[in-house]
Image 1 (cartoon, rainbow, N blue to C red):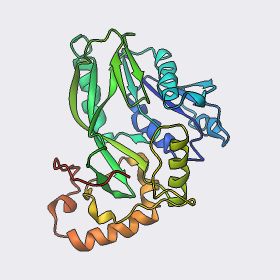
Image 2 (tube, one colour):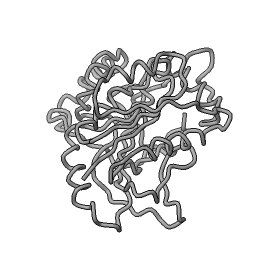
Image 3 (cartoon, helix red, strand yellow):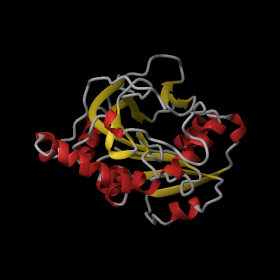
Length: 280
C-alpha cells in the first residue's frame, strides 16, 4: 500500500499558516508528499524547501485569484493528480493531525484498501478559536469532513476545496475514523487574523465581518466557547506554548476547572452539544 499526502500553499508566512507543522504531522505515514506552492510574496517556497525530506515533492504554480474561492479546488486537484498512492491524504495548511491517531488511520487505509465501497475516510473537526484551549461547535462551523480519499481518478476537490465528490455524480461513501482533525486557522495574533480575514473577504471566501476593521480582529469573550482539555499534536508544541492569549486563557481555565477529570487526564474530547453563537 502506498499513501500520498498532498496540500496547497501560498503566502504561508504572511498569513501565519502552520504549514510545516501540518505536513510533518502526517509525513510519518506517507510514502510521498506533494506540495503545490503558489506564487507567493513572502518566501513560502523557501519555507517548504526547508523541510528537506526526500518524501516531499514540490510543484510550483501560478494561482488565478480572479477565479475567487474555486481557485483553491483547482489547485488542490493539480496536487491530487500528482499523487501516486492508492490513498491520498489531504491537509489544508492550517490543519494538523495528532500523532496518536496515525496508527489507527494507517490501519483503516490498509484494511479498506480493496474495499471499493469506501471512497473516503472522515474526521471529526476541532475548530480552535482565539485560544488553543477553546473550540467552536456552533452553527456555521462544520464538525466532520473527509480528508483521506481513494486515489483512483474518480474523486475531485470542488468549490472552495471544502470537500471532495465523485466525478460521476454518485454519492461519496465515507467511513468515520473517530479521529480528530485539528484546525488552527483561527488561532493567530489579532493583526494576523485581520490580514487573513481581509484576504478571505477579498477573494469571496467569506463575507465581510464587522469586527475585522482597522487591522485588528476581535475574538470577543472566549468564555462563551467550550474548553479543550486534551493534548495538541506534538508538531504544534512550540506554537501552543508561545501563544500569549492561550497562556492567559489556560490560567483562567485552570482556576475554574482544576478539578475536572478531563483536564487532569488531558482527555481529547469534544462535546456533541451544538452551541448557538453568532457566526464571526
